[in-house]
Length: 168
Image 1 (spheres, one colour):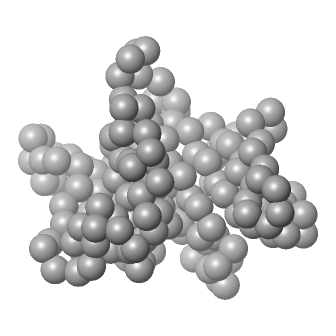
Image 2 (image 1 turned 60 degrees about the vertical axis):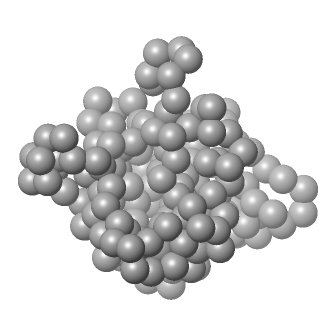
């Protein structure tokens, strides 16, 4: 991870209201995206159609995100540069995608966006009922996409709010 005192670059997929960017701006430089943003700081984006590019293809000084001024929230997110993020959060997204291949594509694209030195962290948050019913299959599917499950970093809220699983 970056040196102590520096902000982590965080990609928040399925953000809706930019929780990390709003609550923890001193810790994270957040890029929040959602298909239907509920906050003006969240980019509108269908992650399955997001283009992942090399920095060289957009210029070495290119900011790792581009949004047109059209769309809701902060605008329509069109592309992100690969290896641009330290942490990615996929919150309440995977269980709402009915197709297994599409879920795998979300995880694969997320892997491409995390740091290339394999120090990136992936946090997946899903409803408690999903983890109880299919948690082992979810973990196996994510591990099949070159992530390693970190069992000691599990987060669970009371009720059906969600369970967070961590991967490296």
